[in-house]
Each structure stands twice: as C-alpha cells, then as structure tokens.
Length: 87
Image (tube, rainbow, N blue to C red; front, top):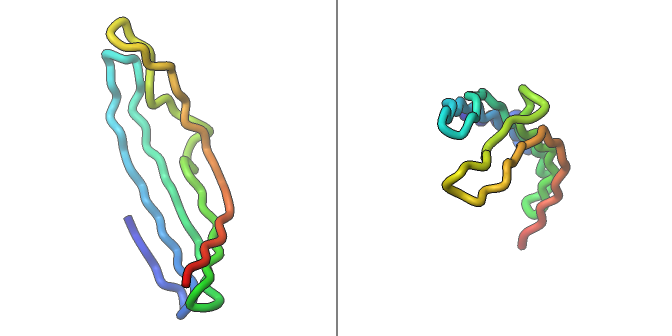
C-alpha cells in the first residue's frame, strides 16, 4: 500500500495484492490493484474517485463445491465516485 499527499488537499492511494490459487475450488491466483484519488476542498468535505480490480476485468473469489452451498462469485472491475461529509 502506498499513500501520497499531493499538496495540502489532494490524496492518492494505491493498494496492490496477490492472492494465491485455491486448487481444491478451481480458483486461479490473481494480482489486483485498487486506487483512490481524493480532493478535500474544505475540512468537512471530500470528493474521491475510486477504482477497484483495475488489472483485470474480473476474477473468481468463490466457487461451488460438494461440501458447501456457496454460489460461484466473480468480482468485477469497478470505478465509482464518492462524496464524504462530516461535522
């Protein structure tokens, strides 16, 4: 994880992580990257742009097996904006 303060009111965060394969569930290993760019125009407001799973269009995190009732789940790439207010 890296976090940078760019000036007094802008932050940039990057998180990279590696997840090993789970052979028994047929889930391959993957490397993913998340990032956040935030601007604080005042001490009570933050606007940010967040990207998740930026290195791939998606990766499986759960798989069904004979021992569980799990539903196979694929985590997709996502980008969203956020407004945070506090007092």
